[in-house]
Length: 479
Length: 133
Image 1 (cartoon, each protein chain N blue to C red):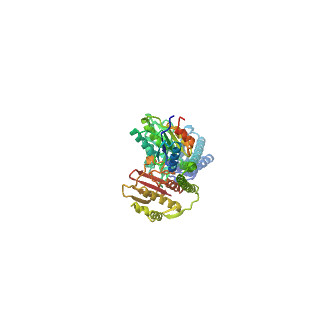
Image 2 (image 1 turned 60 degrees about the vertical axis):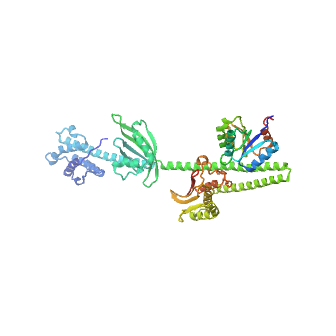
Image 3 (image 1 turned 90 degrees about the vertical axis):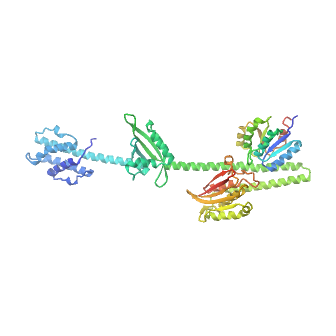
């Protein structure tokens, strides 16, 4: 479609003519940014003018006649079509006829332009809407000039709307976290190698600090005669919702896997421990049956009693574990962490004095956690008790107890200068059931296992750092 | 007929150690029993025997679940010193729960002679003590 290049001077000429013949004066409304309404108005008035000229031809000697040839040239340039060429200028009527036709054509064309402009506008709106719904923006990148431009949605995704245009690329880059930025720069550096479309995922940090996940496609590449990439066109889609759903799905998958593993581990332990006790009882009874001396019988009976006690203890432990695993509706209360630490230190005071342990309790009295009271008591007691139990005889035992905020968690930290654990060797087993590491006679291998389960049940996690002969730090994350 | 002179029992369960000592004693009071409470104690003792050229045990009964060094870790250490042995020592894994994953794992160790389910009955013990009878 032919585009009309309407400029101010032509409009002014037209306005002059319209005023003298038609008494339609729009000269005062001509601005550089003429709008569609004005064009429409001019178009319909030009049509009126054509009708009027047909009905009442101007007198040959009138001013109007003189202006006609000038008007033809104005209309010609306005319509981008030379009417004078086609016209036999001798005959008065024909000229008028031609002018009328010319004006009609011009009017139609003006109307058409407006219509197509409307259409274009509607389409653009639809496109913008579609992009906003799909969260897809399109962009153009000029690598040589390091210039970037894009659609409305692209700017919305990158929050670029209040940035000066020449800074688009720079701002765009800096939105990315460090590792993504490296990949992106590398990609743009190798942009000349791109032959086909190329899809990549990246992330940006929004102004409010949240992460936005994006999937971009590099599409059409324009090259100059030296085969240098002049322009790359592509799209970027905001896939945060999908990504978050994916992450959530992955998390719940991990939880289920973890639970499954725990269950399997649990059944293994049940079968192993219970069977080892029962097999011992079977063997002892067999020996008892064959034993002839009274002392021997008494000795064996003691062993059986011992195993029976152990069996009982195992049952209690297993019961503890089961009660955590099945606890879904736990009572949650707002608890002062400090008071639980104080209580644990009091309970352990005898051992603290006996081992000459210095406890640095730095937990602020202001810290309140939402936790199950029984779990908190068990966790606090277990970790402080472990720090005391596995102190090193080579140095004066010091236990630091701290609490601080980290992201959405309150971290409860117990740091000792005790024997330490070889994490390379035992790391995987550290929180396993019935795993003991120091050869301590009173180690039951159940405390850390239960604590880990309790911590995870409350939506937290546990981290450990340790070095043999230096000490151990446990970090308990409380949600 | 060659009988076994020494049986090495590596197991952290005191009662099991007591039961084994008694049962083997009843079977043949001349059999010497070497008892170790975990893999580390066991492997250190064997290393020492090699060093001092002392007689090695004729059979090793090895528990899987033990603190400090479990049965698998013992096997890994044992493989390292295997070349220094003058003869093959049969190693039996002894466990109270025969877990499928343990059986699979044991297949990777060619030095494991077999599995023994606890409690070990007298007939099985006799076979181990008198392999050629």
